[in-house]
Image (tube, rainbow, N blue to C red):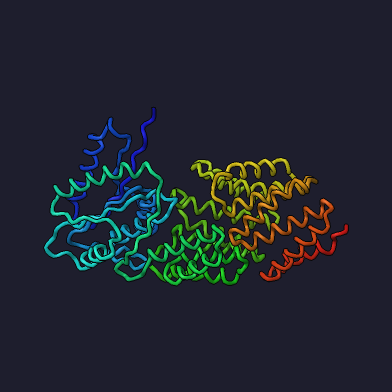
Length: 478
């Protein structure tokens, strides 16, 4: 039997805690030995020393290691630490690590389960340490311990490790922490508002969700602006979405964040994706290829962004009638995703390839891709990817001369897009249903859906979509 992998504890601390770091590592090793045979849970301690050299801001690579960790131990004693060059105003690397861990606590899909903070006794700790401890004490926002010496650190950490054995075997419940960094910028509230807004939109509460996203952009950074831009694009407001991506880019360029980073690549790629959506395909291709140069091909976290850029690049190549380069982009992304085994990402690649097969009239293969995606995603919470797969299922059956078989797929796509507040997706589903009903000879239903499609595209100022809907209305009897 293969042994279970150890759960990862990220150790965050300034430079004056070298001895205490050794105590933590020794304590964890002793715990693993003592519990061997009694528990399948083991731990490993990681820190900044696990991060290899990188051309980008080192703290960003450290933060990605935190995103892969299950627990965090943050320790403070006398010194606060050195300034990490953060665009968010963190004044020490340990502070940025602590707040990164707290952000991970609020994300349901991330492994971080708990953050434990220890304040070790010191005659005159730095003012930021004193202020941080006061905040935690007054708000009861996060678990912390006052520690007298190394022996007490060992004892209290041992208790914590035993507690975590129970936590790791239960479902994660996201925790949203209220705590201000030394800069005074409410990064935790901004991130939590973004997560809340995205979840409300997924649950069909679009109005409440957009209010939360808008408030998040007022407080937060590039991540919040990009989340808001994604919603605006789905809503068909490309000008506002472009403005939001530019605000994200400006924050990256004005701050100390390194240009050669996944965040910068994602921001430029998001803006290029908007250029594609408004028909500026050549401009989009150029910017997307440039965005790829901002990523390290050997960086695991950057590969996720690289795959999303390859998705956009493939879609743009498809629009300029270059199916060979489109297919290469989609297949490159799929190869990376199959190695990592992330099912939703693999499904995204299959949807992209199915679109190419539809255009090439390889309808059997397109149907197989679409059906595999729908089957894989059926037990997962609905997303725009689910809706896109349903659209493909309907399109393939319409092309195969089976419009009645395509109707259930179109209806599901319409329902999903309405739930997710995706007006562009809703318009596509309406057009597809109009086409299916028209092909099936059901004029009344075809006219109803085509008229709804026309009105929605007109409200979004989507001239091409409105023209396609009008064409259906003008040819209902053919």
